[in-house]
Image (cartoon, rainbow, N blue to C red; front, side, top):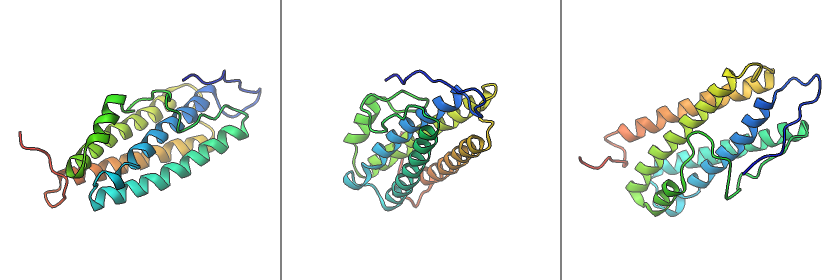
Amino acid sequence: MSMAEIKIPPGANYTAADVRFMQGMIHHHGQALKMAAMAPTHGAGPSVKLLCEKINVSQKDEIASMTTWLKERNQAVPDPNDPHPMMMPGMLTDAQLAALDQARDTTFDRLFLTDMIQHHEGAIKMVKDLFATPGAGQASEMFRFASDVDADQRGEIARMQAMLASPTHSVTTPAQ
């Protein structure tokens, strides 16, 4: 999927990289919502279901914020449900999504957590890339949003790693 050309008006306090970040993050969040939506029908355990509910609420809220940000700047807003989204760092391949869709119960939990860790690490890379681009991520609203995404993703990764490592959790790693 390709987005429309980005035109930045003179005197704007944002860059083309800021716009691409917001557009790409909408696609990124759209895939996370697709993954989380599988939990109720794939036998996810209680802690994974709860995590998916949190992801569902937070990612929908962030998509709404990013959509508003883009619209206020007369920039193209991608469809988070696009079947052919922009492939951003950390996004699952079609094969990975198919494997997740085939998984059930504790196998689903384990695969969901490992896949979502990969997905979240991609979002952290997107923030890092944004801040590494000269002039990008500097306006206070953009800086705050990107920093919040980074902090939220890091927190959820730590939680998911703990869930995978917990001997009392229903998520188990198969014996080697």
